[in-house]
Image (tube, rainbow, N blue to C red):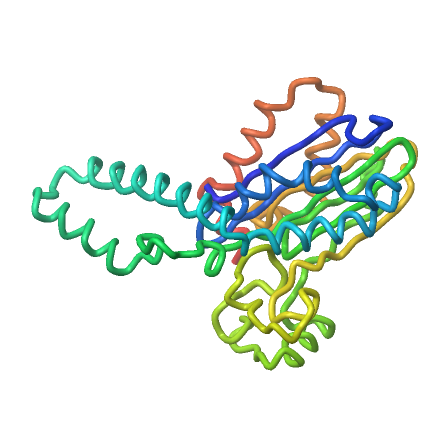
Length: 287
C-alpha cells in the first residue's frame, strides 16, 4: 500500500484551523510517508501561514517539501526506510513460496541487488518514486483545496449537490503541456518523456534537474492548484485517491456518504465501501 493520510486539528496560533490530506505514492511509499510525517510542521512554521495568507503558505509548503527531498539527510532517511521495507517484503515473498530451494532464494536476493537501485548506498529514492496528493485546510469561515495529480476532493451539501471539486492534472492540459514543452520535454503515450504518467507530483526528481528553471517550470512540478471558498451551511468534504474515483461515480459516492452523515463511527461503513470497490465488480467499472 503506497497511500498515506494525515490530519491535524486546531493548528496555528489561534487554534481554529484544521488540515487533513491524502498522499498517493507511486513506485514506492517512501515519498508519501515523508509527506505524512512532515507536512503539518512545514505548514505551521511557514511565515505566510502565521500571517493567515493560506493560499501562499500552501504553495510554499508543497514546493519546500519537494525541495527537501534532495537534502542529504532526507535522502539517507528515505533509503534507510526503503531498505527496511524491501527486506520485509523479500522475506514475506520467500517464506510464502514453499517451492523455493535455498539456492533459488539466494538467486532472488542477488537479482534484487543487481536490478533494484535501492541497493545502492548513494541511491536517492525520490529520483524515481514520488507522490500525488490533496490537502484540505479549513477553519471557521474558509476552506482551501490544494492538490497535485489525480487525488481528488469534493465539497457537497446535504442535498447531494457538489459545489466544489478539484480537477485532476492531465498531461495533455494546455497549461501542463506548455510547461513540459518549454522544459524541452515531450509527451508520448500520455506520459512525460514517454515514461512518467504524472505531470505534477512530489518526488520524481529525475524530471526536475534543469538548474535554469524554477521549480514551477520543471518537466514535472510540485506546484499545486489551489482553490479558496467560504464555508456554507451543511458543508461536507470528502477526499480520496484515484483508486476510488476511477471505480465509482461521484454521484454514487455522495449518495453513499449522505446515508452515513448521522452516524458517529464510520469505520465499518467505509470498510464495506472499499471492499466493494476492490471486489470483482470494481475493475469492471473502470473499463
